[in-house]
Length: 249
Image 1 (cartoon, rainbow, N blue to C red):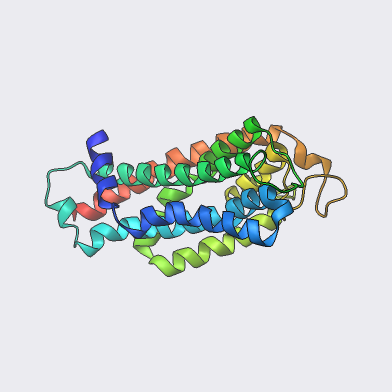
Image 2: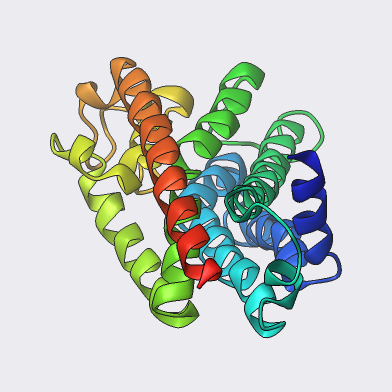
């Protein structure tokens, strides 16, 4: 499996996929410094999980599946390879990119507590920041096989538009009792008890709009993570099976 992963990862070398992995979090970091310096730590986390991750995943997944399409699948069908492993390797490559981007946000979020010379409205502890990065990865990685599938079936731009539309809905639903029925809202919901930031970018305190004590309930973390892992396994298996049948024709 490692050889498959190495091969798929090599395909992304010097492509916009890799550049976007680092460019997207850096843009958010720079914007946070210049636009809302006192809320730097709050904003980089909030802007990242509400818009940044969606951009990295939707664009990255679509570009990833287009690499073989642009080469007319000669790099895949011309070799005696296991197509399921090829698909799973693509998923792992995008998980790697997602993890790298999330930990850039975490790193700068923590450095802001000690190195940046300005007052912050929040003080997210190291363990909470680390946990948020891990949870962001786990609760969004199920979208990777879905977005790759959508990218191949309906194209890049419709996939991106649908992803961002779901983002808007998710931010609204995340603070409601029905949040568990929309998996795309899990990340925003779980950030409430983990780093005490609401989906609207305000601190999770009583005086903030949309706040309720229920949002700080840590039981949501177990539910969100469990369902996300199940969805990841399910969608990875189904799309891998589909990819094997499609490309074998």
